[in-house]
Length: 469
Figure 1 (cartoon, one colour):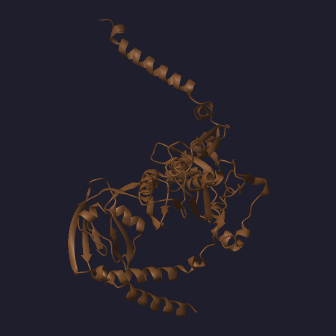
Figure 2: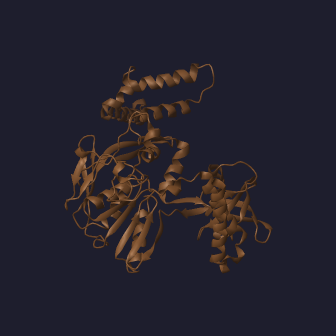
Figure 3: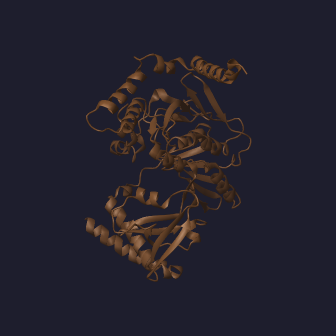
């Protein structure tokens, strides 16, 4: 066999590799290709600076941390909702929206330096292993969890883990003064976003949604069906304190209330592309009245529902002006476990109003914590203190005036409960009283006397009020 024939496969492989490489260069976006061919580009400046620090700086430096800080600084110049998620935090952030986590399935609090179980979740590993409310978890896999200053994050990291991995717990049960060890396997624990639903009175139902995660629409649909089977005619939809989440979940829920063809929301991107979402003919609660409860912490997906129902004259919005987030983010993974959530569009309610409140780059603290500013301006206690802009006035099909430019303004104003401003110390005292009472009377609570409890509670409140005067 000739030498040429012997090396033929090698020459073919080299030719293919060169072809792929050249083709990739030809198809690579021009703006990105500058990184490789223009040493004076902005991208190259950052890379050269990081390299320079890494190799020549007098002290040891974590260049990964430097790069993370650089990315955060870049995004901070855009808008408050374009954010960088480091690799170490990405799983936790994603978990909060997935509707589940892998763990042992308990609700807990630290009480007198002890990790105390408030509830063992149904069908979770702890429930199956016999863990009860009131149990103290002293150790997990030999790691002490009492009599030391540990954060909630540390506890969660210790108790969570990979699916089906074992964890050994040392538990103290106060009821019978016993100490025992139990081993269980971590498993998937559902996290509900619809945490309450019931009939308030004949014909009037109530559903509370905490956030919009992967499973929110399915949970909402189950709750709605349950109430409809109980004689539901009108609904209170509680979105107070709901920071938002997945837009598609909010659209699906709004669809349940609106008739076929009604506009729910539309988005507009940098290039002017408009994407509209319409209601279908599959809504199951298009006839009854809907009362949507909102407050100053109701944001994003919550505002999509409130805006869609308000603009279509379907729902009555009750409460206080909502947060005012009208920006849409898209996540891009960066290849090392980290990710960027970049604002790629604005969304608008059916009448065409943007509810995004003003923001000033570099002043995120004021943007995210403007509740105190609203309080001192009187907005949280007096509807007349809500600032609206006449140039951002819109009209619904039935003639109702609505406003854009900074959240959803309610149809019916309800001022904030000023008792919510009790000092945290006093609030914790109330929580501690409730917990201690239950902890001391767990065995007899099945036969508990509500009157006696109220008498004890009233005495406690009198002492508290007397102490604060």
